[in-house]
Length: 270
Image (cartoon, rainbow, N blue to C red; front, side, top):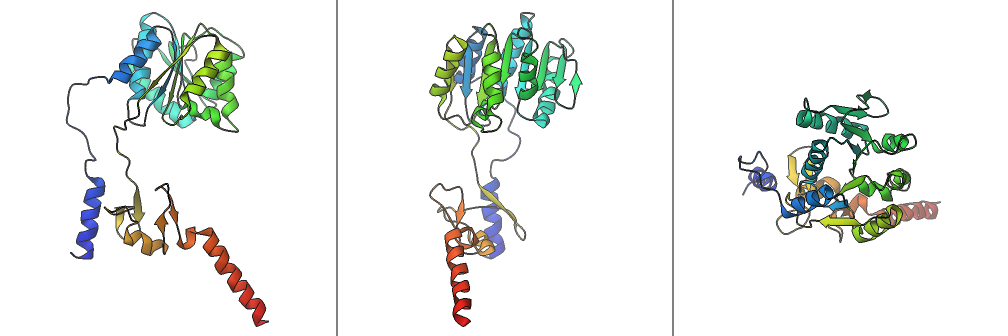
């Protein structure tokens, strides 16, 4: 097999299955049904599911149920760019039947709308002035609560939100959901239900954008770093996590030994 044909086959294997799926009737997963039911019943709910599992669907259905009762909801995100994206999504979903607003550090649109998208910092600041505007609060990317710098914003948002409000918290990367739920129950005085899904519906594949060959897989079928990647970086291999390269210029200890040897040789030469 020639080098070019090998690269093409590796690329086909890497990109296999990517594309628009065939249209089919949508059927909610059991964890989605469980989470929506929990929120509709008024329970604080922490949803932990991999990226692509359908957490946004849960949020949309929860908002829809809230608006159906004539109540208001807020969807918070950690980034202004993400808030702008969600604002566009919610407008397509709920307008013109309901007003959709946006509150970030840069933009303020329909701040008293039926459903508002806001950065978490802005929502926290709003809590200092008003405690009873929303019946449903969605905290997307709630794992930011562990961030050393920004985590207190999520803590304050949870603590200051009135217990009569229902919290829906979404994350793909919380590993201690039981501990978080216990803390939530203690500070809010009401149970917090955990709904989780471990199976990943969207496969993760690690690739490398090679300057000569374009998009290629990071490793071959045996799990070893692809030779073309190794040759580009030098002698490398995946570490025990299977996610990082080591060896070559990535091996700090090897580089340090080589640097010390060069320095010591210079000293001896003097």
